[in-house]
Image (cartoon, rainbow, N blue to C red):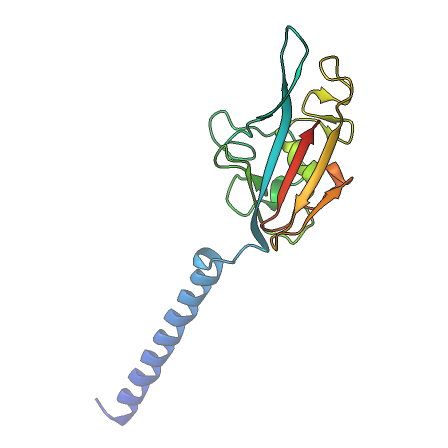
Length: 183
């Protein structure tokens, strides 16, 4: 093989390597690259109401904590998914951008798009009522507790606690605790 043959082989080798690198990069970009979510954080929700004696109507100072289901917005058997407003925003395949994975009240926000998701969005996917006069099925001034009303407190990640009237319009923030209390 002469100088020209060696030169052609070197050029061919460089072209093959360049082609392999290009194809590998394309496969990485299209199939393997993991883009982080635009939004990812967790918030905590408490829903509480006084225990009312069903016979005497006496309102107790003890509070009943309403459980938050563990499968809201998740593609699992028995998953709860009543709203389809943001179906395509979920970061994980098949997940809604607002979901729960346990019954502690932890709401995970994990979205492909940066959006201000509200507590109303979460209650919509859960399929439950949320406004200043009714949470779940319990309305202000119910028969068992005529003087009771819903109140909302929000404690931010820095520990600052304040009342709110936003209810369904409240934008969920990272590391906050939202308390909906009937009393």
